[in-house]
Image (cartoon, helix red, strand yellow):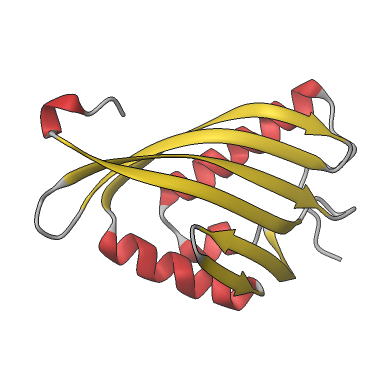
Length: 136
């Protein structure tokens, strides 16, 4: 049985560690690496897109990072309890035409007993920015 440490129930320290591990994985822009943190039957809502299963999540990430170039993400723990974590995040990326964007949002995560994310619900807003306005 695959496990992703730290495992729930979370403490402040392990919740912060879980958030940092997720940030590091997403910043790798490696869909395979990122997808392995999710259950094979994971459920996602990302903006208005609904995904079911690790394979769909991996395909989604492959397409995301083809469109969102020079991607850089920062996550911050918002709240946690037992097997759930809430984060706020922002990330910056450039589209194929060179326009920069900053995306802001919140995610709600639910983990199984093996530390794999079984549910991920993300609300995200994008804001066009100038390159001189970049923070990440």
